[in-house]
Image (cartoon, helix red, strand yellow):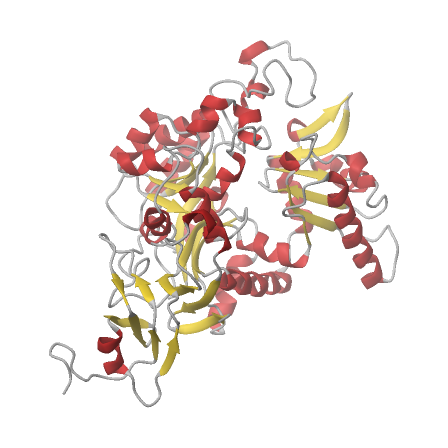
Length: 547
């Protein structure tokens, strides 16, 4: 006879058994097994209870003690970049300048071999994710460096934060007439090859994938995301064919990522006119917020600070020469990518069209601008499809944290950025000790009641790498528990998009998006970045299996 309360019902499609299931509800709930039918979780409990749904055609996966979690939601990413890392020169983790240049030479040589021609071809040699902060001299790649890779073929290398890039002479000449002078670094009046912020838009226009390339990039990115346990993304899209590629794969029933498209502010009119209201779309592709910048990044000296950068005080950020402007010179405190008045207008226009705004703001001055704009627009609204967000919010001070909590503004943060927050690291050099210790204070944020959603910004896309840094952060105010970090990477992302009723925890009635880990992150908090993903399930389908 069936156990009371668990009558025989329609059989499940999939059972995950022999597991340590963490529902990540509040308070945390654990179980032994999960049953899934028609893409939905239909039972969570003991293996005895769940086995009542084992039918003739039910697939049963025995996980041998593996840990099952809600699928990871990357709340701030650039999926096009993830695909490009797979298809171009990926320079992640290279800790020497000469090794980085060797990798670029190899990539250019591959292009030559494929084309059957030597230097001088139109096709660009492109590299991604170089990080000079790990090098001995902490100096960006220059035109001279990249001319040694190829003199005839244009070469472009994007810094890991994608707020600056480096070009060889051939690339500089191709772009020279279109590059905004203010975002081209110079020395003695000549371009060094380093470009920042708006100048990157010109570069992107030259190297952006067409529709067919976008579909190839998305296929590669989706496969990579599944290997990492990622089942949902909030993609920040601008001047890209990726929204088309998402919808094309969705129509063909080949998309197995749940996607929130956060469109750049310059697309607001088109998005509104097309009727793409927040939350509108299919099961897999939905419209999200309107995305805007305020400032740049710490690594590129373009995050907007109240006080000068520690390593630029008295130095012109554009030229490297002594700046007669003193501490008040803008170059020493970063730059505005979007001026505060323009941001206020963007937020107001978005609110009129029914959209929340996700504002990139890293420096403390930039966070002030974002909060002022939100408050001016009375933007802290209860509608779950209109949750306002500050992307990154790295240098928020106590007053700003309290303002975020009071207004219900989501802190969309990247815990992997703490890789630069160790003593003597990049943030120490750029910001000094006080501001370095103030960066990414996740404990302080949660204690104040700020909603926190974790993402990667593709630096790298690896939720367990980010969780590891949040759990093992340098200071007490930055450090949070394993459970809190995992919730920020699951429930937090769902909440930020107004999806918490269908995603983010393991509960009956929610979508069956799950990840199984080979071992428990609670058992060895110091080694979370070494935990492997064993299985990824999206909408009840096994999309990755590495058992």
